[in-house]
Image 1 (spheres, rainbow, N blue to C red):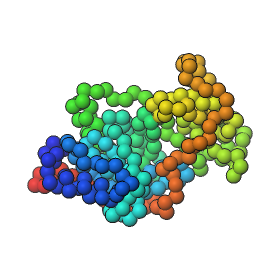
Image 2 (cartoon, rainbow, N blue to C red):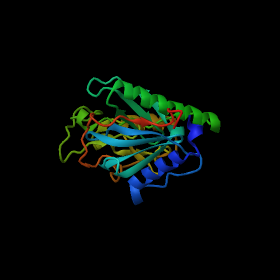
Image 3 (cartoon, one colour):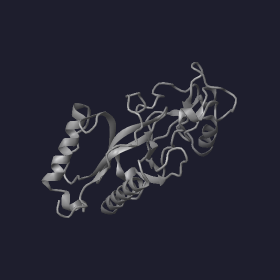
Image 4 (cartoon, rainbow, N blue to C red):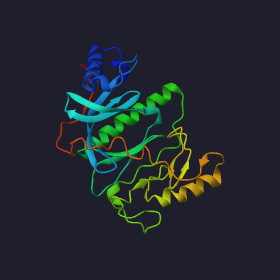
Amino acid sequence: MVDRLVNSEANTRRITMVENCFGSSGQPLGVPGRVLVGEGVLTKMCRKKPKARQFFLFNDILVYGNIVINKKKYNKQHIIPLEEVKLESLDDDEYHNGWLIRTASKSFAVYAATQAEKKEWMAHINKCIEELLRKSGKKAVAEHAAVWVPDGDATTCMHCKRSQFTLINRRHHCRKCGAVVCGPCSNKRFLLPSQSSKPLRVCLHCYELLTSTHSGNDIRGNADTSGEEDTDDEDDGQKPNMAHDLPKFYGDDKNE
């Protein structure tokens, strides 16, 4: 299905339209052999609250961005190589039809509007991953970043269970386990090469585990709070909206 679309005019036109929607804020997406497999809106669980994001599935990458004007303008483009991706289905009582998108550097949850859409998205993404790994001969990534616990799910530190969060006592996230912790319970840093070239904030529990199995990777002392916020969590005015257009997957129509 995908191979048939590689050199088609329809595929070239679609990719150009995606590039134009991101404008100068996005990276060029038209490279030889790349195919736009599908697109649609998914609800992404960000640090503070769920938000609508536009997703584009290519045969080698997954791209998403903030919706400025639906189908016309997007910004804050994120590109995820599919070779790094692992999907994990969720059974969530509050937000149905969700799954995890896990990568070595970042992992997060997304939700579709219906169970059918969830199955369709997951099937297409997994098929692209399998085909990509088969052609490249590479093995799937074994280690993935933790999914951050949303701020709203923790009113007190998940490590000491005592420290209550306020405007002054900020929430922090352990980059190893994703737990919401207070400053004193996350005042250590450790080098996690798959996530950053600089040592990152980790909770005391993960720090002890990491230092017991690694050596020479840690920097002791107070953790640097710069870059603590999730860069995809800025308030863009987009609310989760399950009543959106159905996702479109290309190539299913043999007459296309």
